[in-house]
Image 1 (cartoon, rainbow, N blue to C red):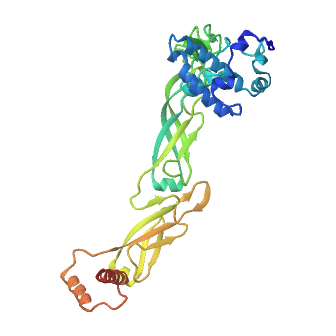
Image 2: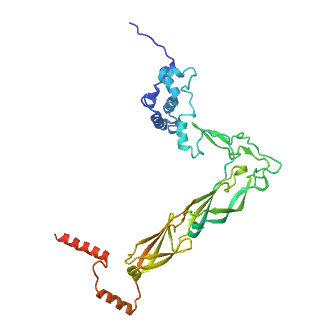
Length: 390
């Protein structure tokens, strides 16, 4: 009995199922396909296996398989018709693989930032934008409260006055770069990689200057000190960053200008400590004021004075809150609060008479509740030792 004979194209007979090539199931999603391909591509890439023809062929097979299966339309055609869907020029064959997909995806992920943000989608080349600048400005707490109009001087690159930033001598113009033909980027083949990098002739500008400006040597910019006016709004905090758009370095040959960033530092104050919109002040009070009560006068960050009533028996660490006496709030008419922390001061350098008075006070004895904190503490100590004896 003679079996049924089927004829297939030789290249179809030699091909392995694309899912088997990548070692994934037919239900694998895009992420699973990518992980499988990445692992195999790294293993079999010819640069890691120099002179190994089997590795080179394997790399071609997994690149072709991934290129088909990662595309939803190609994958649907392959699932329905198999390899036949891509015969007769209908798709990519085993000898037709490049870097528009496949290993290029991994190359982009690994080296995209190093090469300047990715190798694909480059577009027309052009001069690079000018650099951003940083200026550190130190102000006082009072200036932070009130706001401040000030000037800063920065050394920077500005557009050349002679050539108006073009880089070309008066009466001449930049011409298209003969190396990159205006693209600003050139491609070079390195083994299996096609690498695109900025053109060395025009430095990525896409144009070259035959007759450069003598004042700026063709750069279109010169170094100069600029004086700028800066408005510090009330309520700025330490570390606030103020952006002055277009006040950074000028770009090469008319490219966009960078920005200037003013970083605010607030100097420590000798009286106040700031926490956001609130202000804290530690005020020492005498032991008699704390015991008998009284009042104290304290300064405010706005330059005014406030009187605080101290009730009898005030303990060290007690806080008094003065609403609306704190810092200005950025872009708001509101103000924070001010907190006065009482610090009961133990007297020193007592006279003989003062010492005698304190001893008389001690001999007079303490009535219950005169020293609540110490009474409560020693009561807990007594209970502690009693528990140990049980």
